[in-house]
Length: 323
Ligand SMILES: Cc1ncc(COP(=O)(O)O)c(C=O)c1O
Image (cartoon, rainbow, N blue to C red):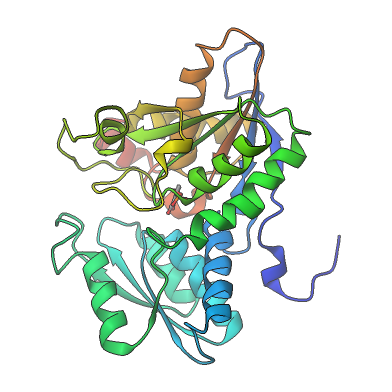
């Protein structure tokens, strides 16, 4: 086991694990990039570190300063961890549909949390975006702004994309993930396409999100609806969703994502969250269209530990009609 000087050195360089049991028998090879190996527990550690380091370089963040962000949880954990290690105050605005485990973990990391209503328009002054923006303005804090900050996709261009390229020895043919802020797909896709233009980028989009419609029709044809998956899908178009590097969107139902999430644990031993299930649902569906044996890399953004009261709770699954 290598020795590191600081926990922040453990961010990135996550393993690529071959999936055997939870994917159908086919000529394709499925690999999962397992992001719960990051010290804050998710892929968002990469983004948190990059956004803070770049803000420090620009002088947007001074020693002892405050970082504020509207976050569905995982970016909050990453920011809280990096802020703590670097001596900054961290304040996070979070919609009330997020799991209690996520919120409590953020508090445990030493961040301050402001809970906002989930079912309001993004422009509404009560939304988690508006509350974070106002806080930054009023308090002179650094708004990480993960939905629009170019350092978010840059983190993935420089780390996630490069790692997948190296770990597959350039064999990657298809890359699959969901879009929340868009940072993971946009940054990773741009890197991979520069290396190998034939790489296909497939996005999992929850039923209820508007990104599928915006990608294919450039307008919202089905109004946004509430869905249970956390971290992916949107009711607005974030600046970090770069449609130009994406090739296909696959609509994923909550029920399919939640059921596959359990299968991933039981058949391949990877304890991951529902957005991992959603990405794999999309990957399997897309793979059926491929006529040549392909190497498919799927992002598993976070751990199942944060969803014990949901996907890994039989009572909740039955209430939702997912079991
Ligand atoms: C669990 C989970 N999955 C996927 C994503 C989507 O990643 P990105 O914001 O890079 O699009 C997020 C983002 O917060 C997340 O929390």
